[in-house]
Length: 435
Image 1 (cartoon, rainbow, N blue to C red):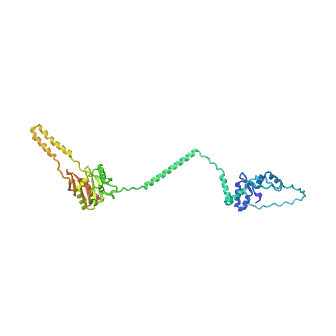
Image 2: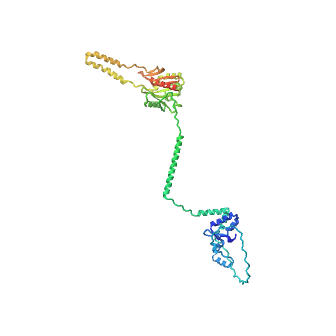
Image 3: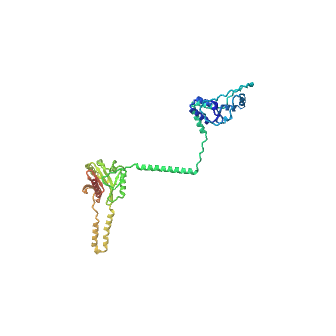
């Protein structure tokens, strides 16, 4: 490439742009390398022609060499400080027409002084850009364009970052407030959506239905077995119940577990227990005439077997079920009051002897009025209640402690007295009519 087309001084960015222009123009790498070899890198990171670098490094030796070689033209300072212009493409150089030959004049040739031998050149300590470029290509096995692009990126990173104007405290507070409000709104929206989702997909807990052969106003769950269960039933009887109402007593799962009557673990005959069916059986509390008492409705599979078992159990049934059907309190206070009245009345007649006979008659009549009721032997008796045959256990005063009877061939009812038995039969009849 002709020397007169080279810019004396280039920056690193300018020389990269020139190389890019040469590559886009289709110039080969060898020619680009030859172009780069014309420059050397200075300490300030710029590039100048090698001739200028050598002139600066040699100092005074360069000036003497310039005198000895007068035929080598010196570099014009205007060229050195010339402004940068992009490297043009190679244009064929058209040489100007040769001037007419000058007239030949005879000149006296004076011999030139002997030229001193140049000292052996010492390797320049300057590390040129071409050497850096060649070493980079050899070590990384990269192309010219790749190396130039990497250096350009490094130069951009070394440039100081543009200063960002600082924000005022008021603007920061405004941004923080807006951010907090947006976060709160988003959290509230997420919670609202979650609550709606949970409400629409809530798990519905199905309460097990307690089947009972009659209609009941209340239901109560009892637990335990034996004496514990009897105590739980007694506590339920102590809780008030409206007149004529019925409270259903059930265990954990009345449809699958044994009935309340079976969990009593009473010494009932096995023939009775074997014929009991859980479905259709129930236990409860009934309030009739202001008195609350327990009852059992038992579904049986065999009338003959269960009736035979009940007859066999009559000898100990009242005592076995004493916790549920206790004896009535004895009326000792009423009898003592009547006896005291009968003994004190004759004493009033002693004041007037003429009226002794007349006074003795009321005393005798009053003594006859407090005659105690007939005494019964506690035992089961056959009776008819509401057109149904029942077996009633009465105490010595004839009060019903316990009775049992069949509503039909498959339904056995155990109750306290005839009034409770009639209430239960009425509900059984209504349930059958409704079904």
